[in-house]
Length: 504
Image 1 (cartoon, helix red, strand yellow):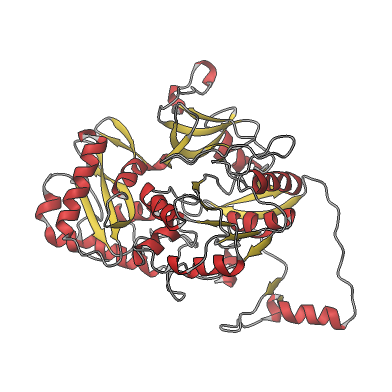
Image 2: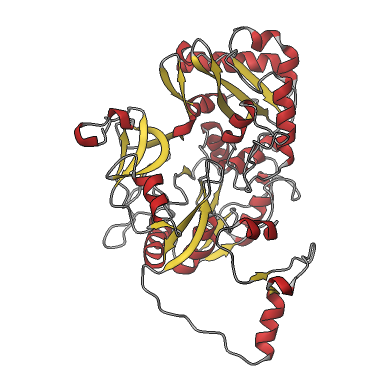
């Protein structure tokens, strides 16, 4: 896989250093300038050579490059500065988490993602923390208590993970029997990022923590390099005295972090004279943007692609950084991220976010995971459908669950949502970091497939076998190649019990 990636890349390395795994060693090809990490370390040590000491660099010297947006478009190389990243990461460790030197951080992320870079490696090193580096899944290794066993063993003070991981734990351990086996007294809070956090999951793990410790959602991106919004739990005044923590709010990812001037903007076609973006009032749904300048942790450009940087982030809203997300800022300043802008549906003249429906469906007691996507409709333009995964051991009648979900959306969003169909499936396609691949689902519905070679599967997918399963299931449900016939039978979700019970 790595060899194929190098062959496909526009910028190829002159050599590759490979860290061998004993359980599955790779073949080293010296003709391709491949080197074994351990062998090279031994060679240097046997030769009596000294490792180089630290090398001073300018604050704007590139620190690392992370490729992002493989799930939403062409991957882009985000370039990070040294100095700005260090300053903001250290500030985040102190003020968001309230961590102090000598304490322990457990971030259950992939070290190759921006969260892993910041909260497994750089942040703990900058502040003088112990850091727990964990490779494995939250369940089945050996059970749903794996994370909590490590919290007890290493006396972790802060635990950081993705909502998807907690949903997986809750799905197989709904009574929290595995979690409850361990002493979590060292833990001050759980922090979530990567996907929207549903209130049911948050409430469940607040109960696991005894009801006195927060579960804090926060919002950021590879481009930002640090949380854009959060509910800070470690604020202090100029004398170092602790200030009152910002209370988390249901459905919100918190308030803007220092350096982020967040605004909600209307679509570009509604801009004022001279193309000036139109800022929307509080509690109005729109495009989430950050008024320039950006804080020091943010990317200064894309690697070898300044033009692409301007086009992707600065062109649509002059004077603002376009996050590509949509949501609202409420009257109290809390930011609610609802969906990607390409997840906005036009339903009978109304702009609706798929995220607003997902939040409702996720509250159903039998549902573990949710993805809402639009179908074309000749009359309404688009209509939403829900794909849901049930909790482990759920025994409710599936037809009843489907009826209840449709009713929940109607009661909370109203008839304007035109929500008529929920389909129960076995698995949803996700990245290794837990993000649901909604674009991939939409592409399958549009008729793209592995067979016709039109479906592009992100390299970050957790399990590629789910794609074939999803294609087969979608075809059985009559959802592939959607041509505007969706919703022609408003009672289809009740009548077609075979479709309702179809499994991936």
